[in-house]
Length: 161
Image (cartoon, rainbow, N blue to C red; front, side, top):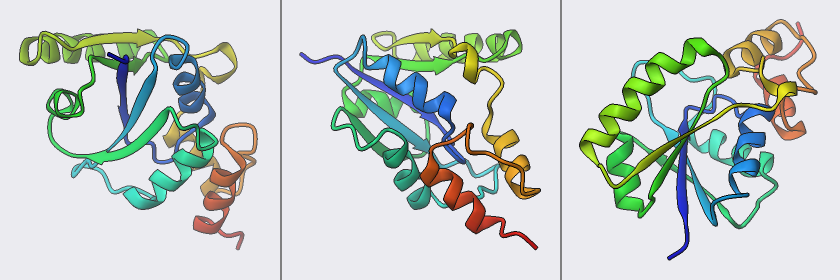
């Protein structure tokens, strides 16, 4: 049975940090589903459809990477998808407490699904989607933070005055 993992997030937009984690995950899983969360408490910059296209571009249409939208409980989506692993990124120590609590709840709900924590590569540790959006909003250079397709999409969302 192939190892299938889920990497979930809002990816609004996908950053080089996200893409790096996806690519490194493929070193120990056969396939990964990038699960684009529909979060009703956030007003996204990009639609789910736009985010899906941007994610595919950022992972260079790798056939081992599937991009799907989901809503509801992540572990329910993972079980329905046949995944045995949830991958979570930890950029800073402050992320750990929340992620640890979520991992324990997910284990309670679906004990057969493991959560694996990954740390970012050193050159992407400081990158977050919210910072990328803010830099782009004020016409800052995001070319080293996101895939070129994402940078183009951000320029279209925040055209120069």
